[in-house]
Length: 99
Ligand code: FES
Image (tube, rainbow, N blue to C red; front, side):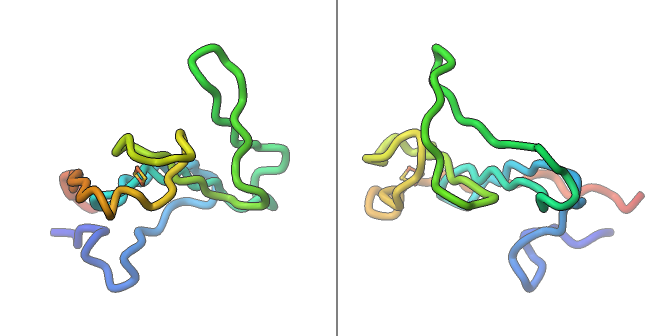
């Protein structure tokens, strides 16, 4: 049986270098992680509202944290307010068999 990624000592599962990963933080935001730019030239991350208007993401980051607790003052981005509000969302994926 394989080890669940959340149980690894680094706390962060490895992902392929060409994969955009959306990580559900334990009791926190959804973190969208882009692959290294050198491996995916031209790939950009854009966050839009329901009408398609783009929000300004944090400068120079390969990852953005999207609020899912509803308490951030910078929605759709997380500002850490989930901690003060005791947000609980500790979903876990089923471990996958080694393949
Ligand atoms: S998830 Fe962090 S402020 Fe909402």
